[in-house]
Length: 228
Image (cartoon, rainbow, N blue to C red; front, side, top):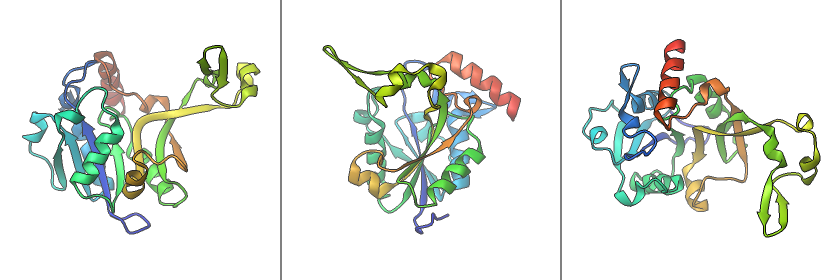
């Protein structure tokens, strides 16, 4: 599978041990298979290969499908405050992916559909964006917010929005963490997620749940069962 530039497509799935909110969540069973396997199966449908960046021994020792491999993550990159950009950079370097395009799928967003991934891939293939990500509608009152330094308030967005009635504010969206697609070389040049030209694909709240606690898992499990 190639993108429009003829580059290989590689899915990276970050899987860290030691979640404080829900220990062992990445290997918990969702519909009879480990949570991470749902992301693996989707990645294999949309890319040439899938790489699991992990420090979880049970995953390292598990039998994985063809075209799926492990990039063992050092403990220095497995802390709960480790930035995702460092994990992605390590994987790109370790697996020599500088000439590939990366699809990043979070295992904790198992409600994303194949159609969601397909739309992100198609938008990225237009060549108009350095990064494409999935987003979900958010409370637009955030447009009224700002930063406060001593007594100075600096609006995060258009200053006029601070004085709008909420119903007059434009719709607001934020990343839901389910899907990111980017060029690996641009990522390495910027040493971060490319942010100059970002494309977005909307996902409904019903498919945007992220698992961070047992309550989240039980809710996702219920929704997953209802729709599969």
